[in-house]
Length: 58
Image (cartoon, rainbow, N blue to C red):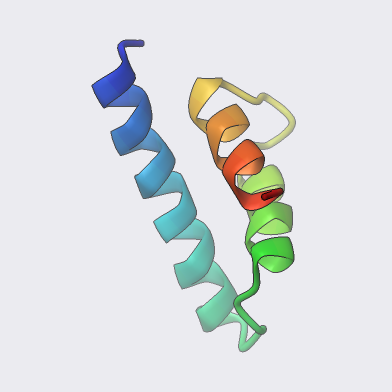
């Protein structure tokens, strides 16, 4: 996966996590997004998941 594809996949993953949190009526915070990203990754992290989690830890 090249850098542009990884960035696009990361943005998509974070966006999907935010949409899911809003749909569930939960607060949207870095921590809740990170938790949702991990849930959406289905225990099979890839480069986009690793980037997203790394960004949200800052």
